[in-house]
Image (tube, rainbow, N blue to C red; front, top):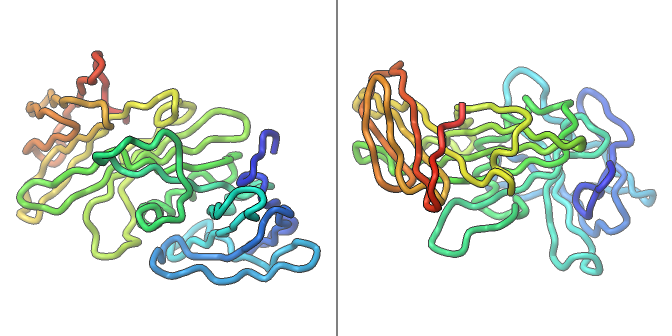
Length: 279
């Protein structure tokens, strides 16, 4: 736990069973609750903490089987440390729980330059769709995981909007892992996103890899299939080549294509240069 900060050093595991864990909270924690990431509209519940700073048992996310709940700690630090600073931690099997953060989708304002706490409505909605992918990170020394909503796309044929999220896990030892996820419109706020790319030992979606391009196949309600592509803020155009071809200005693209069409995507960047889709 070298280089721990107010959030990553806020709790350590003192005991763990298959069903739950107890945590020793740092003295700067003023309020502790638990919540279910798969129920973003449900407020947190108070978590009992003993005089010694040790919590009651907190349920652990299920390691296998159906992913129906994802318990997390929601802690708030003392105002003497950081004013009104609430944050989320989840148990991924390490000595210290993992810090969950969020970067909002592109808008008209100044882009976020660093991850924000994942306690706001948009952050909780994104984590409800992506929480179950955290299973793949358990036991790998993960310090923090950030959900970066790098693009929003209006779907073809009058469809609703989809979001593209880059889920980046940073480890205590340094290397990072990235899952790129496609959040199609869903009937339930906890419908799992589709993981379309998984890359290990990468700087992608960090301050050292701020550009990303991804693509996937998508089926409209009409039954027609499309290749979709989306890039981060600096993408000014996307081109599809291979079994089908097409191009679009801006950070998103949609091209009619057979379900299994082999298509390569490349993007142009605002400052020059090109970008290939992550796989």
